[in-house]
Length: 197
Image (tube, rainbow, N blue to C red; front, side):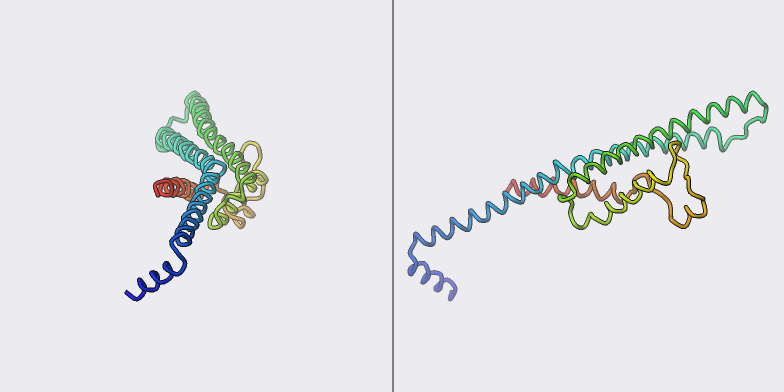
């Protein structure tokens, strides 16, 4: 009750016009903040998180296709006992080569997506959320290592003992896939909520 009396006293002292102007200023200020927030989120989605999302879900599908080929390869050629006859060995060599080359083509498409991702990140790094920087730097490290430590056939060029000390290279880590997917969907939801207010 005491707060109400103070507010009433201020209103009577300042007059209705001043209070009305103050309320309008507060509403405009709130509206400007909301508009800036929407604009920034929109820019993040259009220039960074949206394109990255599209590429990581593509790469996820490419990994799944690669895995299907590897599983089929193991069922058909690794687990079964094949004849050691020359003709059978020639056919198997041809079939296994074709199967593995096909599986590897899907990974090469992931690598092309990684190049696109790096270009997007290079151009729009300023839009990156601070909590995503570490994951993006790990992506950059693996991207660079793939470029430097492997030849055009995808074979490691450095001695295996050194490679084991440095650590494995990931074509695209599950962490960055999940992080980008989560962030993109989160930002879309935030914009939808702000637009409803």
